[in-house]
Length: 289
Image 1 (spheres, rainbow, N blue to C red):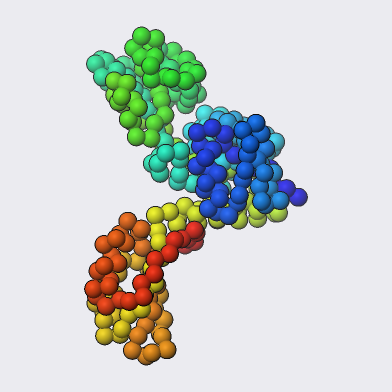
Image 2 (image 1 turned 90 degrees about the vertical axis):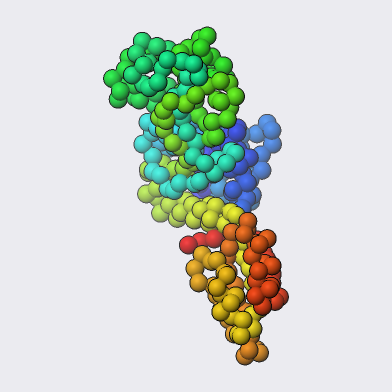
């Protein structure tokens, strides 16, 4: 039996393959292939535009897929959400779909869009947003480069952004946020009821989340003389209490902790001065809480 898995092609592809690699799944795709190979023979992968994945998962053509919450909402797909994955193509920030206008525009909110023209790739979400505000405006699909269409072609745009820097560079200001989107691992509802497929998908989800949990963290091991133990413990940050093990020499103990990697450059010298020796830093691939 195989699990038919959809992976996003395009801007999110590299980040997704990297996350899967850290989770233990090695996917490889040639430039002309839409069917990546995987070192797990129980997975049959297909590369698709992230916008299309919810539709094919809902229809049962594919068992599961990785896509954005924005795409699920745009398609209106009825799928099983397995887990949320906090990563994106550039940062760990949520991907925001925002209403933006030129800096000198008189439009300050959705009410000012009455009778105006709005360009976006997220047509259905934008229409529902305007309906909620009781606004009648023309919403047109944008094939890309949406930010360059105002003010000559349209009055406002709804565009996706992580940092807002591109919009700012084009002389635009954000006046509202329609939707915040993160990456989701989704399943077809019938596939989710299949015991083998559900078990497989749950395993993948656990490993993906474990890989994300490990980002930015490292492990530290060290030996500490009992006389210095309280001093060392006083400066140790940790996710939980550090693991402490006795050594053959009863006057010493071994400590092991998980810390943020960015703190290590200051922490290690402090630990050494406090009496810790044999300090070892090591990378983490997965952390399961």
